[in-house]
Image 1 (cartoon, helix red, strand yellow):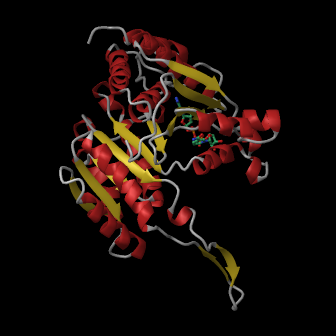
Image 2 (cartoon, protein in one colour):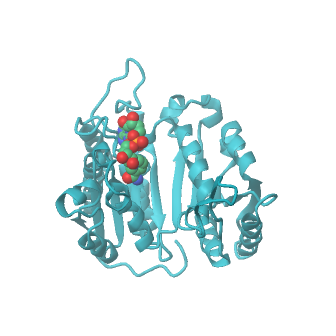
Image 3 (cartoon, protein in one colour):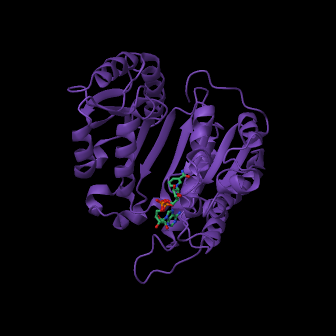
Length: 369
Ligand code: NAD
């Protein structure tokens, strides 16, 4: 989707990094669904590698060199989750979460895409009123490798007075803003062609530049309606009237906060997929949830976020729009039938497990529309 899309091989190579906790349980269901698509002329090859605690246990490194090499050779990466309480006391470099952060850095995954879609069958699961969220279909594009999270200098220093002072630096180069704006405009073109750029241009110099550059990039996309909004207003509007948005583009820190806020509009973290893309459209696809150690190994995790991440992978990295839509329709079909994992079920509704949900989605792929 970004400029300069890399050529794809005839057999599409998918690196599978299941990770920790519920990661392996939900990823296996995503692979089950992708495998069921293969009959449709889609040639997919899956190769697994260690990441996170599993890799730390095996080789003392949450991102082993072989895993990174496999990711570099693949057309896309399907990722589960990493992390667990057993590892919280380890030095930072060995913590499972470092495996994912390093992977993002090594592969230049600068564009984070988070769709927030309410399936009509689940409108009542949101904490907002159904009439506010029904039909919501929003995409947040967050810059992932710049901003105050990476800017130098940073630190905690002692002032002449003896008092300590913490400081960080917020930076964005023009080229960084151009490439994320390109991704967002291109995404808007596939959708309702409306892009809202979120900044704080009334206060911060970095976002004044952000607004100028996004506006300039917008000249190349005359078919996309561009608007701008201050981040404080955007946070409010997401709760007041989230359906006003089609695509939102914003920097790393604002995106971090707004995308978590928006994710809760849907009712369950177990439903939300994400993509992190490089400049060639290659990417890492993962549910937004973590390893959920509290429910791991019990066949109760919701696999739909992982399955919908696989659909995003088909769309954005493997150029298989029809297959992506088939997966999304199959998810809609099982929800329509009333199938619910524990996180989605309301009192009195029948609950099914992780494997049964994955199996039902795979079966629904071959049902007529
Ligand atoms: P979490 O997302 O793992 O869990 C939060 C809550 O949501 C838990 O109650 C969990 O049971 C529930 N939940 C999550 N996914 C679910 C699913 N698919 N179905 C049903 N319920 C689900 O967040 P946390 O508890 O803050 O973190 C647990 C571990 O995961 C930590 O080690 C954290 O660092 C790690 N983590 C990893 C990632 C990642 O790999 N990208 C992201 C977030 C957190």
